[in-house]
Length: 247
Image (cartoon, helix red, strand yellow):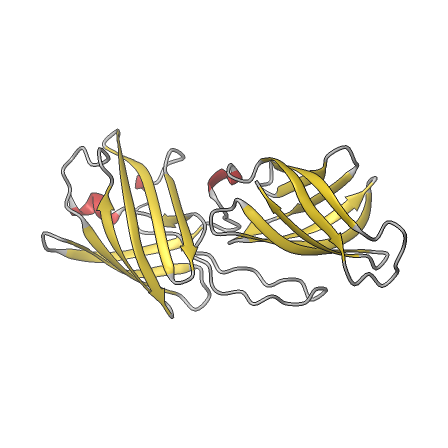
């Protein structure tokens, strides 16, 4: 019973720094993204889905995976203080066909943000070490919550080095997709303007092309639920954009 509980995956991500090209926003550590249980990879198949969302110091983790061919689901909630993460591990209604006990996770984030080490303790007694490793480049599972068309995002020219007639505010539709490499891609609908980069935590650093030629760089910082963003973009001609959107 405890072994099954101990196979739970916990996620953690540190937000990537914004490129030096832009003013650096204040960014706290983010525990958002997929992880695997280092000690027992057999419990974590392609069917496993583990999502963590952090809002401030509050962390919520939803986990769905298979035990002996049957689906189980758990929801954890807790908080992080410094490098210490403590969460109550509770089985979701209908998600515990084996009658396992709830538990407590006490984990410490490594200095590089790529590992979680600690213990899981069953509420009926007994504990064991738990070790987790971050999935490189991980964001929300499969990027599914981001993929699709984001209507009427606000694309506002501010602080352009070269001010021209088109330096104003626009409503832009963005079509997000996932590349075979795992990169996140967005296209300005109706234009040959593409943005491509890897999502790390809640931060998407991207480069852009226009009509097949390198055009600029930028970043989006997504909300904890990945349904809104704010960021900046600068092109090779010195135009600067503040960009926000909601799905």
